[in-house]
Image 1: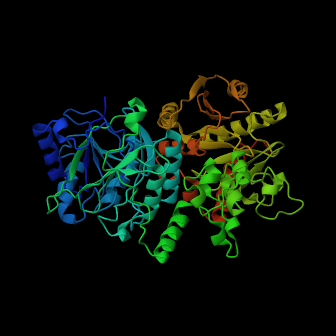
Image 2: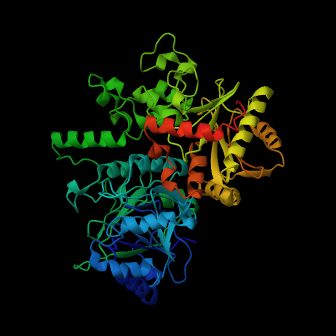
Image 3: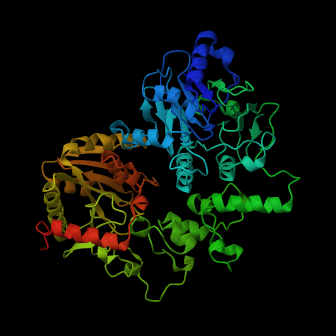
Length: 609
């Protein structure tokens, strides 16, 4: 059954007026009378500033999706708004939003983020109050057969909330490519609003991802545009702009759709083109001046194509520009009109797991947490001169012989392993156990190496237990990981029982399952993992304090989230803002101080002392 969805323009905090109108629709209109697009059109929903999940409810509609600014724009409406936030008034239908800016947004959403039930992966909405959910950042979910992705925020904002980043856009592209469904924020067509109001990053993203439906708010007008064609695609896109709730001109702010999932449509239905279909509105107009064209193209290039080597190297030629899209995926929607080089050799290096920054910019700025290879597989593709004595260990962040190794983070050195704090540690006692030999993972160790690893693991367990914590070990075994590192994070013993469930739920959110096995002896768990490991594929695994082993064998060409283990534990520990290591970087002096403090704690448990 197709989902039944109500769409709303900017609420601006006027929730009483909004929900009164919603309830009147329940009572006075049938869905068939209210639909404005009843033809059989498959939705790949694109909603400005939010793509939202729908859940079951009483009444004719499954959910209400709010676009544009959700919070009040003035303090006068705050009391009415807080009645719904604090539960004094009832939200009559599951309501989802990502317009996370306006009066009181930082305070309310900060409190929402800290709720225990909102920790971990919550791509289907963080509960603000009963029936009211906030979609944060970017993500993907399935809605009654529809794959939906969302991007939250505006290109610029004065506060912590309501702003999207380039990482959000890139994550959205990755999710969209994986699912075959595209989504992004919206851009008001030029014949409705001055193009200066447009977000060019969004315009380019819309042209690239080609959504089936594109719903927008924020501009204060109702506008149902004719369907438009997409380049290199058989389907059309429908754009709908909705007005503000309670607008003085009484323009339409509420709309309903009942879209049919693509999976149950025939090719002829999917490719249907109404008689009023037009060209894509995001293409440059013929009458635009050359200077405006250059300005727009420049903005587009700097935002849509992540790396522009020539802008970093002032004397660089056109040949010094590599197309990010082509290197990543092997294809580019711009084709011959792309301003960047489609280099097959660079694409091959990417396919072999070489770091994109190294390929395109000549260096990696992500630090040792980068899980890609930092050496070229073919010297002919090298974009930066290297010394004649350069070798694998000199390119590797974790090899002790490398000039790049950050020795101030090292807390213990054994025969086969050493321990070090990671850059941007999740918590102060977050540790990496790293083979001294350049090995791809810890599942290919010699018996002697496995024995020393066991001693280090026991030492860390005992050290953490002396402080009321349990140790969680996890490792990503992948062709993308050049030098093995087993991550160890302390978790309060009182919360350790939650670990199996939170890891399993997070995996399900991302579309895969973790195999669960329990062992009385940790060495038996290691033997099981060594047996399961397939060098041609890859493996992610977690060793829990009670002997449980969670594992997932990577499928061929599967792009597994490199920071999955860290992100799950950040949720469990109620520090979601530290899920990204780049948010946790401190000075070298601060890192050295943390390392010295841990050395003192670990000294009596260190197997090498």
